[in-house]
Length: 241
Length: 241
Image (cartoon, rainbow over all chains, first blue to last red; front, side, top):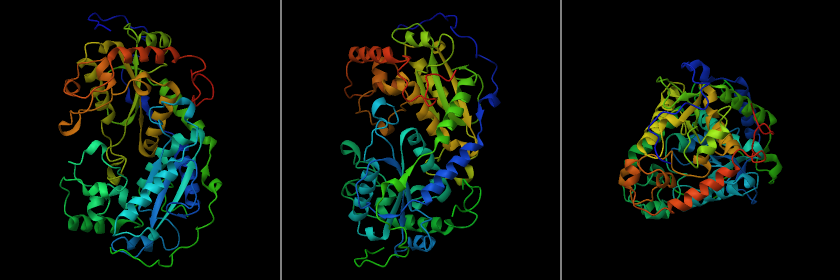
């Protein structure tokens, strides 16, 4: 693969049109309707303890709900009083090798990624003394076949719409153990507020102080659930209920 | 936030139904149609040099095409003889803060992420002596408003369908400079095959040998474009043309 210094005639010259941005802009209203349909389905799925009582196969999107009394999270218990409407965290589990499409044949093969991810979250919550696993519930939605390409889209839509605290403000809940002893990095803000995960305690870097983070959480939560705080609501309104 | 040791009565007990996996499985055929529509649009967008001649605003999905004569990539010139059908790389540029929905107000604000990303790729290609920027073209598709949630889905679909070499086999083209001097890691296989990026040359770790990677590329490319190698083709057939 030696560098060519002479410009070769192009094999396919067609398409080298003058630049016109408008020819590249895609719009499709069906997409918004599709996301609404999926979110409606999600909001109708049964709510379970975390981790769910049975191991199951599948990948997809999940939400964690808090209904305990601990401040400042008690706001969520209030918001979820009548229905599980305001997750504290939303995440996804995608098929292995999904991003690179490494394993064409195994794309549709079932894995238990979603259940594993929920179990890992349960372990995180159990590891810290400031949270009780009994105060958490989860909801999840399994995508099969070609629909599994929609997992990332749906996760992003729900996060934008509901702005769950542990996604949109307090970083680090979903982190894994840092790779190959990279403990020079700072613990996440989640780990500063909720100390206890063994690997987080080994992190040596500096994070801003707990007091400042908790104040930020309170300010953030003051807006969650406010009627006019859902500009990204895919329904264009304020609720799917 | 002291740990509660006594289990409190649940605020919302409804929903704690017996576990039934089928209640969590979502299927929607409209999704497949929607992806097809977006891919059809993508395949009709004008093809440009890389980077495109004008700076433009927007985020979305892009593809790079190779039409040079260097082995083993010459296979792509052959495949793209009549139309730009087989990208060597597919990527996305998403709005900043998209993943966490940090900036609700700015989600719709335009950024030039897509153009920046294409420029960064052009710099990578120019930096290495084994590739000529003249042998590359690009195509891109801008998503605005709520449709921008679809970016990840479309990128994944095209990668699954076309299995571009630099996504599905040869890793590392899209890498950025390693953060804060983490040069103890191995250079990517892309950098082993195409040495020249300054930061890649600082990486000290071990990658498998160039000869072995190039043999793997040849084997991989033998299957690209084969009639029966598109099980993930969202059209269910073999082409969108």
